[in-house]
Every structure is written in structure tokens, then in C-alpha cells.
Image (cartoon, rainbow, N blue to C red; front, side, top):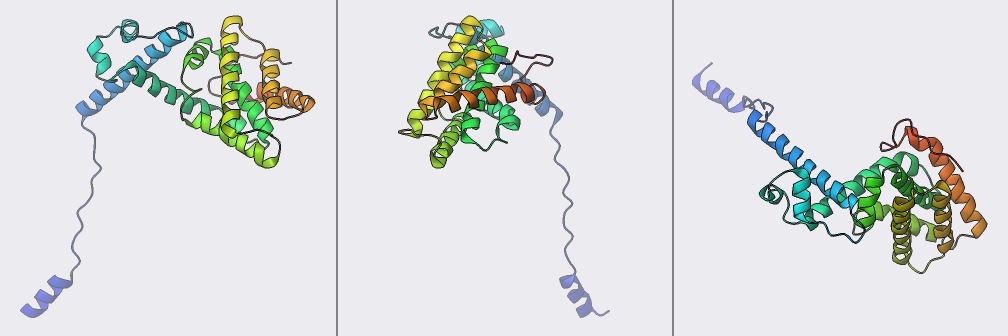
Length: 248
């Protein structure tokens, strides 16, 4: 091949692409990241523990949390700027976890009345099974602000108005009523231990407030709870293994 041919071949030969090698995280960086994640989780667990043991009107302080976690004040501020920030983060985590955990027995339902009755009663049943969780939620967290859980509640109410199952003045008002009923029901469950009759009866009252006829509201609430008691123990992640509640 002459010189011209060699130059032409050089111009047309495809350039070799550099081989991309997987980027491996430095061991020290990974260990430090995992240590920070464990400390953040430990601090949030202490926030949960402290909040769940206080009365609804009790005040949670950073000193309470760092004493429980056995860390210095500076450690807390390495992760959060205030108690409000820590509580808000924990609330969002719990809202996402609660929503994800109930989807297998909740999202398969098409009837807005059954969806409302099931979501409402699952919430209160968890309060019976996990009093510390109920203590935190009753104070603050899942029942206020904007999160996926509240979005689901509003979506069910909107669906009920479109299907004609609900007769309400506004979705926001109905949502506030439902959340308020949950809060007060959780407080009673924390105080008395609660019962399935109480949970079903409260759910029926909420449905009646949404415009559902009394007999239908009672029937749907009881039917939804009976189904949950059958399906949730083997499906919902937070349900204690081997725990069965006496059905109605």
C-alpha cells in the first residue's frame, strides 16, 4: 500500500472506544457513609422513642433525644438543624412506610367506600398492635402536612364523589374530618387499648359523615375489617408474626 493508501486507511479506521470500568466506592468512603446512615437512623429512632412516650401535649427537646441516644449535642446538629426537622423527616419516612406496607391489601380494592374503610381501619389496628408507633403518630407525623399517605386519602374521597358514593362539601373538609377522627381514635386506643368493635364503629361513623347510609356504612366497615383480619397478618409487613385479633 502506498503512502496515500495508508493515510486513507488511517482516516477511515474506527477509533477504539475506551473501556468503561465499573466505579468502585473506596472502602473508607463506604464505611464512613454507612456509619453516618446508622447514626442518622439511631437518632431518628430516639426521636420516635421519646415522642411516643410523651403525652399529646408534651414538648420534645433535643436534650431528651441526645440523652436517649447517648450522644453529644454536636452529633445531633451534624444531622439535623432542629427538632422540627428531625420530626418532619421521621414523619415522612413513616408515611411512606405505612403507605407501602398496606398496598397489597388496599390497592387491589376498587370501591371508594371499601378503600376508605380499609385504610382507616388498618391505621387503627396498627395502633392497637404497636402502641409506640401510635403514640408518635397521634402527636404529629402522618396525620398532617403533605405526604403520600394523605394524598391516598384525598384520592379515595375524590373517587367517592365522582362515583356518587360520597356527598361532601369539599375533599379538604372530608379529609380533615377523617384525619381528626384517626387522631382521636388513636388517643383512645393508646389510653384504653382499643377494640375491634370501636375501630369498626368509628369507621362507620366516618362513612356516614361522607354521606353513606347508616346500614351500608356499618356493613362496609365490618366487611372491610373482617377481610383485613383474614389477609393482613400474612401480607402486611408490620403485623407481628403469629398475632391474631379476635374478629367481630
